[in-house]
Amino acid sequence: MPKPVSEQVVVIAGASSGIGRAAALEFAGRGAKVVCAARGEQALGTLVDQIRSAGGTAVAVPTDVTDAAAVRALAETAERAFGRVDTWVNNAAVGVWGRIEEITPDEFERVMRVNLLGQVHGIQAALPALRRAGGGVLIGVASVEGIRAVPLHSPYTTSKFAVRGLYDCLRMELAQEGAPIVVTTILPSSTATPFFEHSRTKLGGMAKPPPPVYAPQVVARAIVYAAGHPRREIAVGGTAGAAYLGQRFFPALTDVIFSIRRIGADMLHADRPDNGIDNLDGPIDGPGRVTGEYAGRMLRHSAYTWLIGRRRRPGELALSGLRRLHGLARQRQKAVSAGRPLTPPAVTRGG
Image (tube, rainbow, N blue to C red; front, side):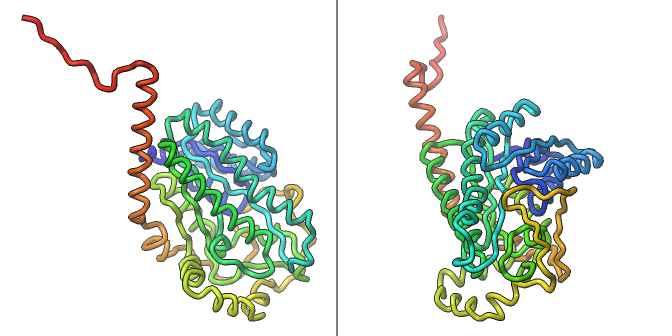
C-alpha cells in the first residue's frame, strides 16, 4: 500500500489551473508536500502562496511538459527539495474545438505534443524517481473522451484515447517487471474548469462543457483518493459510466445521438463570443483559477464515483498479486546473482 497522503511528496504537472490546481490544494490540505508544475509562472506563484498561507508545504517549478529535459529536471528538483517522490500526477492538457477539416496539422500536432507526449515525458521522468523511493503511484488524467469520442473536439479526443492506451501498456509492463509502482487513470466527465476559455476554438464562439457539469474539486478528490488507494481506472461522474455502457453495447446508436446537432454541437456553444485568447502555444498570463466562467449548475459530488467508479475490480487484485510474484522472483534472481543466500542460515547451537 502507498504511504498515507499526509506523508507523501506529490508532483503535479499541469497545476496552474482547473483540475490540477484543485488537486494541488486538496493534496496540501491533506498534509502532502506538493511540487506544482506548469508553464504559467504567475499562476504557480499564487497557487504556492495560497497553499503556504493555509499552512501547507509547496514549491513551484515552471515546466513545459513538451520539453523532456525540463520534465526530468522537475523530478530532480522535487527530490532535492523533499528527498523523494511518492506520487506523480500527469494532468497538463490543451484543446482545439472545431471540425477536423478546419483544424490545421500544426494544431493537431501541438495538442498531441502536450496531451500525449507530455504524459510520456512525465512517465519517463517519474519512474526512476518512484523506484528510488521504493515505489509509489503514477496517476494519469485522461477524460471521458478517452472512452467515447465526441464531435468537434477531435484532437483532444484522439489524445485522450491514446493516453488511456498508454497507461494500459505501462500498467502491464510494470506488472511484468514486478515494480512496486501502481498506475491509475482518471477519467473525468464534463468539469467546470477554465479549460474551455483557454482552448482555441473555431466554433464561432466560446466553447462550454456539456451538462451535467462537475466541480473541479470532485475530480481532485478522486485523484487524491487514488494516491492513497490506487485503482486501475477511476471514472468521475455519472457521464463516464454512461460512456462506458454506450461505447460497449451501443456504439453506433451513440454515434447517432451525438450526430444530432442539438446534442453534439449546439450544447457545446456558450452564449458569448470567443475572446481570441488561448493557451495552445503558450501560457495565459494571470493568477490562475480552479473554476472557469461556466454559469450553469455544478455538481459537487458524484454518487456514481463513490459507489462504482472507484471500486476495485477482481482483475486488479489478480494483477496486484502477479506484480508481487514477479517482484519476489526478481529479488531472488538478484540475490542469486549477488551470491547471497535466499534464506537466513540456520543457527547451530554448540554443546
